Amino acid sequence: MDKDLRIKELERELAENKEQTESLEKQVCSYEESSANLKEEIYQLKDFLYSSTAQIAFLKGPDYRIEFANKSVIKVWGKGDDVVGKPLFDVIPEVRDQGIEDYLNKVYNSGEPYHARALPVEHNINGEMVKSYFDFSYMPHYNSDGKIVGVDIIAQDVTQQAMLHQKVRKSEKEFRGLVDFMPHKISIADAEGNSVFYNKSWLDYTGMTMDEFLDSHWTQIIHPEHVEKVEQELAECLEKGKDLDIELKIKDKNGDYKWHLCRAIAMKDDGITTSWISSSTQIQKLKEEEQRKEDFLKLVSHELKTPVTSIKGYVQLLQSILNSEKDNITKPYLHRIEDQIERLIRLISEMLDLSRIEQNELELHTEEFSLNEHVENIIEDIFHTNKDIQIELEHLCKCDIVADKDRIGQVIINFITNALKYSMDAKRVLVKVFYENENHVAVSVKDFGIGIEKKDLNRIFKRFYRVSAKNEETYAGFGIGLYLSNEIIERHNGKILVDSEPGEGSQFTFILPLNQN
Ligand code: ADP
Image (cartoon, rainbow, N blue to C red):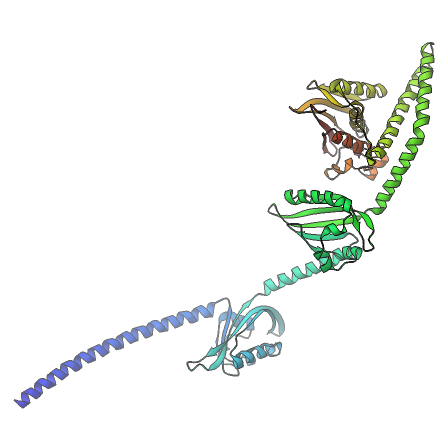
């Protein structure tokens, strides 16, 4: 009985052991499977690190023995593939004294990671030292007990970017050298118009340091009587992104104001203003010359006015005497003298107008008259003195206006005589009177002459401005006709438009509002 019991007990134990053995076998199987997976993952990770474009190396021990070096770092070192197991400075001894050993020691001894940007390192590649730039990270490598056992390196070759930065820095240095060398005052402002740079010429002129100048407001150095105008123009330029071109007085380090011509252009990216570059040139001497010219003209015109008017009187007297006699030889000459005197009188009155404008004394005497008839009469008068010309007049509307008849006549004469003067041989001029819109009437004068370059289109309305030295020699003039015309039309609340193509011809148009008192 005891024996049977014992057998059964043994059989049960055997069954239990079998169960345990089976379960253990299953566990072993599962361990084997996960170990194979792990091996596969480690293999993939190593493969990933090995083929990464970043330079990666794991260094072990105080002599930084290479435990792992990927393809990229092996290429940078340039000492062949057989590097694993060797101390780092046996493979690349040339970098030891370039600070690399110090960085590694610091990380190895302190456990503090070290990062550097665009660090230059020279490697000996086949006997030649090749300089490259790297972004670096050196990190301590810990074992399972938390002890530092090595240093891991990850680096990225940034040589191309570093070279580009160097080029940019070099060209910026050259640019600064250039603008400091220039006698012109150059400044740069951001998109909102806040200055960020002034060149040496500006600092020398104002006697301020760069920081003082940048901290001060530009209005402090501008003559008080120009501040409002500059503010208005600047606001318009900033709003519309258009170029600035203005004459104003700027205070120097002694507190004296000198005339400058200031120009600014918007630097744009995809049509959006990113900054402003401005140049200011001293034109004090030019202004003084202009003043002398103006004073001289004023003096001469005053002195000439009386004798010329009395010559005209005598000519008219002679004409009336001769009218009663049959002297056909003298009469035409007297007529010519009268025409020339008319021209002279016009010139003298232009000169006098100039000083009237300067002193704000140009008055308008308005009356109602037919613009068509006025234009017609003026053309007849011009034609009378010059038969070689061809002036075609087109009335596209009939219009009476309230304006200063003589002054409007002065503008028409200026447009037509300019059209003839700047036409060389092709003395053909087209004049049109038309409605610009329901509230405005216009007179345009078109010629087929030498034309005007775009850059000069705004400047020709400035006092004494004449297009170029070549023109100055070829065509006589003072450069005041258009200045006066512009003043006259502006005082009538109108405006002048000019459209011109060099070599093709020009069209000057004045537009006047209707129904003004
Ligand atoms: P001026 O003719 O006496 O020089 P204006 O003030 O009338 O003075 O004209 C200023 C400048 O504008 C001229 O010197 C000339 O260069 C240019 N200009 C004016 N009208 C014309 C035109 N019809 N064609 C070409 N250039 C012109």
